[in-house]
Image 1 (tube, rainbow, N blue to C red):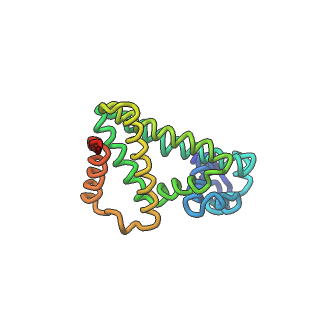
Image 2 (spheres, rainbow, N blue to C red):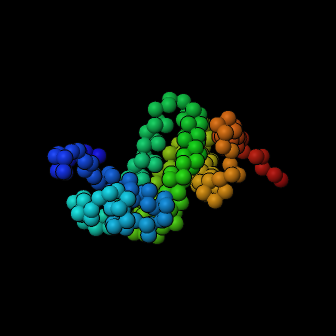
Image 3 (cartoon, helix red, strand yellow):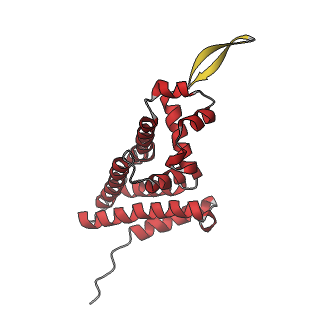
Length: 208
């Protein structure tokens, strides 16, 4: 947040000036709590301690906020993660880092719930194209890691798809049955190791 000067009984004091990013962050938190229906101007203004005027300074309407929030989700929850993983030079280390990051992110209720909220509103006109783009980006990127490890393109794509569906299933489990998942750091690391082992296992031989 930037700052602005406001007058009070004691003279001037510093108060926060909301940015568009503040509103999109609040919108994503609201989606995590109550789905897309929870993204409404007045409740968000109350959450932020702001007025509706502050909202309309940045956005023309609720749809504009939803569109900006979904694009922020794409940027923060996909492109930023890929950028972090790409800094690792070794493809197996990149795969391990990616799986560890995304599985551990579901332990944070807001992150996991936002993913599920996006899936639950997949038919919304502002969500649908971004969700489709994000899903393909995630599958294609993960498939690229398997290809870099030596699998042919078709098999790499298959394993990338398995990795993404494992993540989505993990997010669902964290939401509805968190007690079923490992919580201690050592146990979570062993879980990630097991996921990597399964995803990189050699293909089963053909059965006659």
